[in-house]
Amino acid sequence: MMIGNLVLRLIHYVLSLGIFVKHWILHFPYIGFAFQQKALTGSLSYGLQAQIEADARSFQKLPNHLGILVLENDVSFSDIANLIVWSITLGISYISVFDINGEFKRKHELLREEISKSQQLISDTENTKHNIHIHSSFTDRRNVYQNGCYSGNSVHIQLLGTEDGRQDLVQTARELCLEVTEKRRRIEDISPQIVDNLLQEIHKFPDPDLVLKFGQTDSLLGYLPWQMRLAEILCIPSHSSIQYKSFITTLQNFSRINQRFGK
Image (tube, rainbow, N blue to C red; front, side):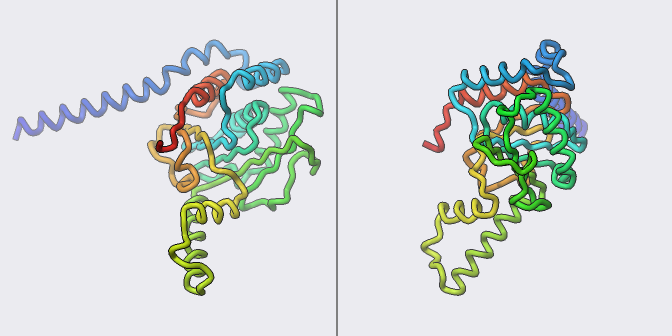
């Protein structure tokens, strides 16, 4: 009995040590950045736009759709706005933002304001601004950010919560079942491509290429379970006070990944 207890205690200590080492490794790459980029904390400089554009030219590839998962209870609208604006300046056209409490969906107007502030800090030149379309279940899809102006610089941001993703799969499955029942579609005709098409009809978004997961939760908590089956997932300890250098380093890691897509 005593030996059994000792073995269980030993296993507990080993697991605890493993979790500690994992968290330490996750944090370590970003420790240096906090000191190197201290001048950028909480604000952006006008010179940052040129730096971001230069970084974009150095990438082998960039995601077409970037997913941002905030799996933390406390969310920072200003930090997420910075991530969005950095992504837009790099040339990323589609961004989805997911948080476990649905804060960004409920307070989408606040996010708009923070995005506007972040844009103004990067550049005050009108021809460098983008038309940002923010989509969520709480907004009209025709809603256009930045005074309703259209131009070639359109960017789409999708705000998601735990009710999205899985619910979309349920809705799609019901639609397919109804079509089969009403003999509008045959079972043998249902394919992954058909499911893809139906899901994209809901949000009009391409599948994410890269997902940045913020927080220590080892789960995606239902974020687009079908659409991200081929996406790369990279983890960052926290979105709070994230520095540009940390963000760009993560994208550089993605740029170097050889995606085989199961081949």
